[in-house]
Image (cartoon, rainbow over all chains, first blue to last red; front, side):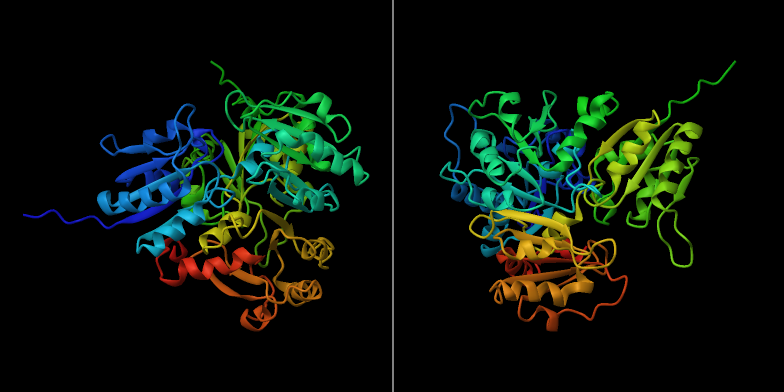
Length: 256
Length: 256
């Protein structure tokens, strides 16, 4: 009797913004059918409870004191794991296609002849503001939203922030805390001193908290940035709405 | 013996883009704990299988041949239902805060003294492109994405489409099919005739399909618009990637 070799395949799964209940049913099904799971630091480790006990799980993110795998190393590990084990589930925070490098991993695997699949995740760009009571769009306040990483790969401020300051969209900035003074200066220069701003720290983790203000006072109100601090900055009329919805403490999801 | 009156409360839940497995675990838990469910046409009715059998479910969307409730009517029904039944779950397609009027409903209920909560959903604006192999962001192709409804409430083309044509962001247009000729004209005028475009019909429904082209040929390639046709238009370098990832038929999620 021979054991049929499992088909090598890759499913890239979005884990959502941190709360382990914010993964999809389809994501849970993928984890249950995994032959090996590769996950990064952004995904909540409680999600691994969906993985059958005997299935190997491999941490491939950044952890203090350890040299992380580079993207080429992760790509090769994904393909090698698929060939050795069968169904690789690659668990990534948020949605794999929102600044998640999910496409690069799928494309690499596809070129190596591995079948690929994508399971969307709840994007922090929409849900983290939402959980703080800030809708990225709202009739009468905002007709569009523009999501960007504020920081280029070399650490400098993205030129698109200046473009966004000239437009009407709600602007959602990921990785912007280190540049918050330069960011508000661009909005000041565009005549938007009184535009509402929300700074949302630590996503949907238990220590999540929000600071609300305007372009002219948010730097003074926000915490001093320390390297590694996670946060999302929302600039737009909708940013003022969060304070209202959470004012009475009625929005329990904000508290976890 | 008296029966304790249930606490009136409202949870607005995102149902995701159509595939009933793309709701979150938290959304399922909300449906299981509902005393009444109000849902619209965008949510897949298979999701109602999570609702306990004895719990009333009320359709409040638009259906041919019936006059729909207006927003004020829905707001009042939400509050009345909470007071009469207890926990109202309001199920909405996609994410409630992405052009979903979720904030308006929560704000109305809050002002009436009803506790409110939000459960994020998978937004069609990110997941529908993703399921067609188009990542809204991708290193080397796009550093940001800008999501908007192309059509104003009076049926005219949004002025923000012209603004977006002048910038570098991936542009994701909801409700744009009726205006596709005017939209590509704005991108042509911005010197972007060769910019890739994807038109994604019918979200993650079983009859979903995609058309790929460029600003100069997409109108000829796309289907003739008929009123009520649902579709998302993506303009940006990333739009060309979908054709690659799905070329070998390896991405099974595209097929359902």
